[in-house]
Image 1 (tube, helix red, strand yellow):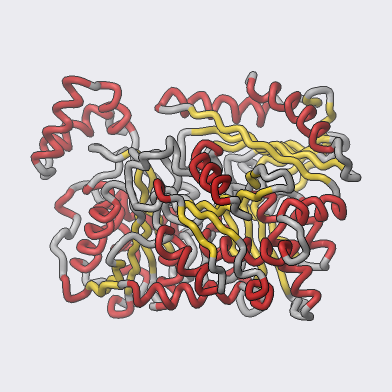
Image 2 (tube, helix red, strand yellow):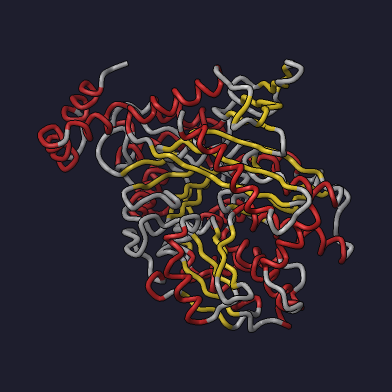
Length: 570
């Protein structure tokens, strides 16, 4: 494999623009480590597609890496489908350069004779998924880095089902991308006649579609004055979510003013991620001032939803993704059962790192539950494979992602917000809150407590350190952790499940992935995996305590602190 210096030379001597070459020369002179990072590797598709820091070089998001990705996608599509039938939908978020990359992709696809449906401004990721299906496109492109810091951008590719591409198509596409070794192989000259612009008229179709997830519209009408504070965190949900909630009948919707306007620099937050309590600070302050019932927050591409709830003391609690998913799963199934709308062939889907409480809930209602690898694309894959045979009623991942209706095939923060608002209205009619509702779920199924620890390890050295940790867990597994016995280990890279008591090994059915799970006594599940989209290694801790008592949370926290110490010392 050519060294990074050979790649630098190729870019300096190749047909790259003068601005790019000037930036490379500046890095050679002033920042050799950045130069090495930018040229030592190439961006690849992970759980969220192509994602990286913006800048020059094959390991950065720029005109040429996005160009190669788009030309590779075009070549893949032309090999797979009849040329005249190919159309691609393209959307983008509010990040710096997102519009530029989206328009660049549209130009390249049209230059290849492919019809393009291009949004005229920033739109949520789920609306892009909806557009792929609405226009019978063969693919979709979403320019976004989701909740990453401002220096990042990304390029998600969707298949004709509206879900992100999964194996083997993702690898086939990246192989086509790798075949692009020179800018001369990229068709940059646009054919404007093949580009159709989508404006706010199309938004109406999307908003009408996601409203179908509402189960009891009369509940909203009876509690339309529910007080909702919303923050789009400078992202794409700024106009659409208030419209969606108003169209359902809610009348008291207030957007956090400092975070209402789109801004790719995300000036009010360090990370534009509703999972980060710091990102929710302004929304919490605004909610306290307004005495709001609930807080809703979407990330820049509006596929994730954060939820805050006012308790009986007037303070606010932030729900995690597992808690929101459990509330929505239980409300969906219990309400459908009450309304006699629970199909016999209904099913739900969760990722392997999502709370096992979802399993308890689905078993209670006799509903099939699928477990999939981390990444909502695998949830979409199950929807596609079971379409026409089973009825999808919900899919969730712990990282604040939920989908309640298959008109979209990716997690949908707007749809989820509508669902949460309905449940909040349902609770308010009974003088309860979402917290009360959650506690009732715990009382029925037991207490579930989860924590996640993410450790950032940047650069090539960080990548090696992450790999070393995974090898220790895989090949030098302990018999106990914090004096609690391990009863089962799942190694998804080796595709095997090991019963540590009987020493028996059984194969796993899911695709191979660099994930290790430990199952301990006392209902403890620990999952370790490198992030597919960020330079991080992630540790997921879950503990069950039955029956639920006022002391359950304190007991769970103590146990998890002991467990965390072991893993953080690796």
